[in-house]
Image (cartoon, rainbow, N blue to C red; front, side, top):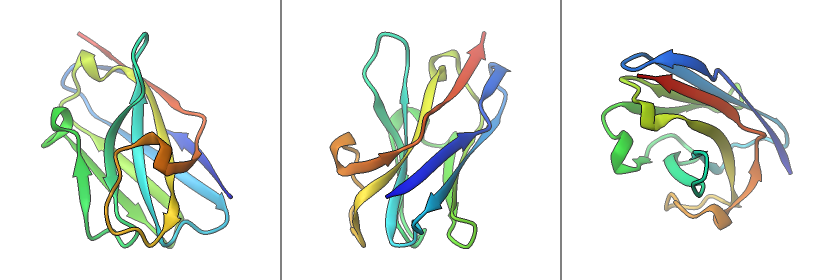
Length: 127
């Protein structure tokens, strides 16, 4: 099991930027795809971005393409989400998650495929 801790959330004006970090401890997350999900008030948790275990592939939900960038540093056991051109509709609690399966090729967008989750960090974007 890996423990995940998100940081970097906050309040920002529309058009601004934030960088979220997710630090892993316990077992190494090398070999595991990682993802960011978010949950807005009154809505279901949704996939935002994912990155393959080696960092060679990424996948984004359409609403954040061109604005968000996911990356990882396996030496530091950390995954990042750079968020630019933020919009009020990006307001949510953002969660980091680790895939249940090691060396998976495809980046899953399904919550059930992720077995370890952080506690979340709040991102609020004002108009």
